[in-house]
Image (cartoon, rainbow, N blue to C red; front, side):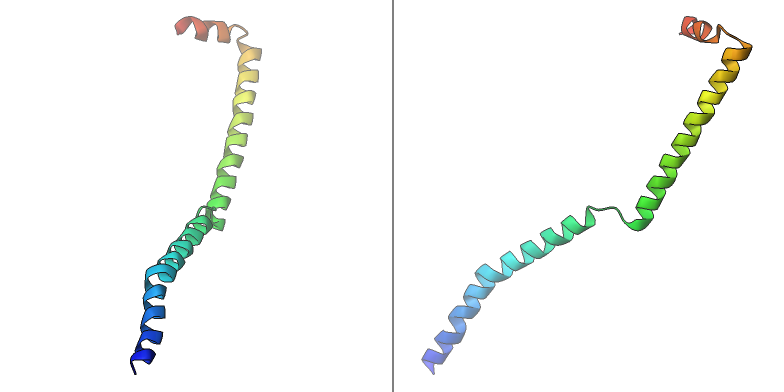
Length: 82
C-alpha cells in the first residue's frame, strides 16, 4: 500500500511543481503573442484611416494649387507671419 502511495504521490508532486507552472506560463505566452496582432475590425479601421489621410493629402495639394494660381506669394506671407 505504501509503495502505491509513493508511486502516485511523487509523480503528482513533480507534475504540480514543475510541469503545471511551465504549462501555464507557456500557454499564456502563446495567448499574448496571438493578441499582438490586429483584429480584422482594427485592420479595417486602420485601412480606412489611411485612405482618409491619402484623400486629405490630395485635398491639401489641390488647395495649395488653387492658392498658388490665385495668390502666388501666399507661402512667403505665411512664413513671414510665423
